[in-house]
Amino acid sequence: MTDYMGMKTILTAAMLLLSSGLQAEEDHSTESGNIRLRGGASRCAGGLEMKFNNEWKSVDDPKFGWNLRTAAAVCEELKCGSALSAKVQQSFTRRLVWKIEASSFQSGFALGHNVSMKAQYSASSLEIICTESVRLVNGSSLCSGRLEVRPQQSWSSVCKDGFDQRGAEVVCREISCGALLNTRSELHASDNTPVWRKELKCRGDESTLLDCDNLESKRENCIPVRLTCSEPDNLRLVDESRSCAGVLEMELQDEWKPVDGLAEDITSATTVCRQLHCGFAMSAKIKPRAKTFMWGITASGVESGSALREHVSARQWFSSSSMEIICSEAKILNLSTPDNNSTLNRTALPNISLVRLVYLLLALALFLFAMRFYDKATRGQKPAEQDNIELNSYHLGATRAGGPNEEASEIEL
Image (cartoon, rainbow, N blue to C red):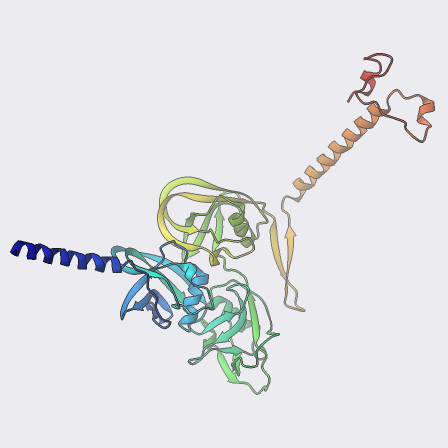
């Protein structure tokens, strides 16, 4: 009896342990407000953590789908600014983390509402960095939109009057975008949009927009300002002899590394060539190489016309292959007009002589073929027949009634 009770106790304990282990694999939902970024330079930077049942755990992506777009949802929920980076950090120890798919989130939807997640052991976790006091909203990309600042606890739109080009250049640099392309008025601003009635006086070398001097504005009306910045120069093709062909490298967290993981398709390559102003993509191939640390990218969401950095999840891994891309080397020049501060795209072709030569050769070949056809078709005709306006018939390659070989040699092509 004692052995039976002892065995029952052991089985009960085993079942409890098993159920606790299985519980870690069950799906849960958390409420909004239970997320944070920890371990960074500010509350808007660090490792992503989520709380469930009063327990904080790091967050990891089971399918490597997190990118700047999903990171923007985290920044928005934390009332931070623009998303600067989304990175997967590797550690030497495995620990329980929340595995959350990036497809559960979209920018503009509160993080944590009906989010499916699982607690699993992992050696990796997500690190997100957002700006603290400036952001662009309602834009077509992360580098365009209506300008908002957060001088205190709430976000307010910046008025176009009293905001100059130097201030706009500071913003583009602060949100990790490229050069300023244009500024314009927000045409459809809501009357309920809070505005910041300050005039900013920037030198142009400030680290953040709020470092600029500001004065109280005496203007009663405020039209919000919209900015468009170019994409950052975080891509390059490395080749000794050509600038628009070679091994693709990307800069993340101030480190340049080769890129691995892109599919051998023209869609991703076209995105790269466009960002580098190198015309259109001609080829994309995976090349073997010596093993080294790289930026691993899964770019299944890359679309033609979108910025590469917004749609890829980057993690550093040890790989023996990299991506080699060849572009057409047609340089696209950005020319700004002083009248409307807009950007015009013009194309300069370094190999224009070669292109013209190819067209000339094709035209010459067609001309010679047409002349040969005309010469053979009209050879041997009688003078009286040449004066006729209508041509009754052609017998190209056909035989006449006089015999199978009569005049066949004269009209054979």
